[in-house]
Length: 318
Image (cartoon, rainbow, N blue to C red; front, side):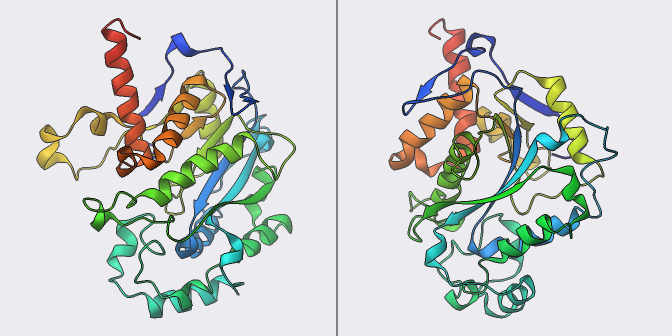
């Protein structure tokens, strides 16, 4: 979230305080537990993920040791979209950049326009991708060995995967009118990522809060983690805490846009995975995976759910 962005939160009082059972597992009642930064990535943008962590040296996450008492309650999860065993071992981030710059078959401007636009396009060379995996191991090694000076701001770093096969790991905006799976990759990765935060296989404890921070999401000021934790404390309780779109690309046709699109919270947000409302929306997204609603990106779809729920509540049916 940018400093100028106005924070938005979803927290209807009618749904606060209760626990819910999902799949035979009990979602925690409290929302004052540990937080994890969920860094999702696919085979094509692993180098962007690595570059993002390098930028944290300039925009240091935390201040002094006593700036925030809960700082060490924040972990990092690198969450890959595909199955590790489908991809060859990679070399280094330098190798990745070398091959990406020479084998991509579409204009480089597309790389900057779309967060996931890359591997999930069939025209990308498989040879390119062979060198893009397991660079995450270099990130973990740098963290564990203290090469990242900002590692002191966090507890631990973990790696997990959504295990999607290539035919499901798709993000193809040009085909959104003809392919129901055009945004399937980000949608499924979001759902599986939040479930991994709730019930992790990599840790003995789950998390109450997950901050989705995609590879192309970078901080713009120093001590951003401290600021984020302070805002979380000020805004509790909430189901989702984030920002609406604040750019100017919509100005020429803003009156033509639907309310859910105007009011939806950007996907790079903080999700309270212990909250009943968040679990209701997450469960609905999972149910809709093979339905027409899968045409819709997860953040916009949750905006629609929220709008529909508020309208029902006003009508006395909620």
